[in-house]
Length: 364
Image (cartoon, rainbow, N blue to C red):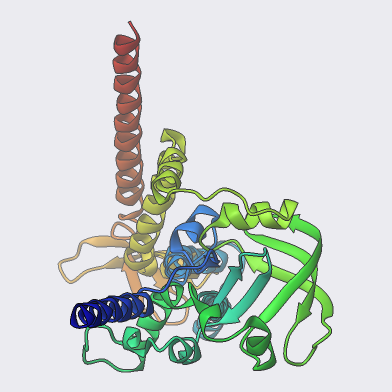
């Protein structure tokens, strides 16, 4: 009998130990709501990403070149040095804008906001620290892949939500604030909500300000659970979570036929502008010289005795070009641009008409 009780005691201890180990490996998840960077929300709120900025640069810069060409043709003849200076200044400002946007984007993806079970709002910066206190440094390279610092940063950003779900199991929030790892945002007031950001006044408690300091806070609307954060900032109560599929459907529904046509027209115009810059650069230079009086019409005789009408330089009679050969490419570019645009509009109109007919058939 005693042996049997001893055996049952051993079995119970093994079961208890197994359950404890299982609980250690799979701790109960907290109800913390994590607001991490989301490319989907960024697109939803029309916030530019570095790729968007690059595309804007590529789409806009040919028009800068064309504007300089047309200015030189019809307003004031630009010398080669002046022309280069204009393009360098314009390009420099655009590149500076891209760099500023990249810095802001990096700052966004490295900050995470968190709402705990008691509706306390926190802001933290992603770093190795969070992986160390949760003893999950294996998530910094989960597949033991060979990679440098960039790979480590990628996994750090990707897996931060998993790490932060149970942050309070290891250390308290007050301790994290004292360590300078966390900021508590409270007493939120004067909330202003725009398409791209949240603006409000709040008390910030951090390592330097134990009692808190009141300041203006700006949060970009490029974080997950945007509707949850919207409800919290407006009413003090977290809003309802949204499904990713619903957000994708919303983004798709915004692409009306008119918007698609406008988007195509802008893109096609930018492509044609690049072709115009490359193909018509020589003609623009000649036109600028003609309008500035540097070239005048003249008649020359070729070796075979045939007379030829040319634009000849007033400074050098050996510098000339035939009138018949000048300006041949303007018309083809305009025709191709208008033809493609017209075909697209007809195609889009046909799609709308077909959908309308199909809808009427279904309703009947």
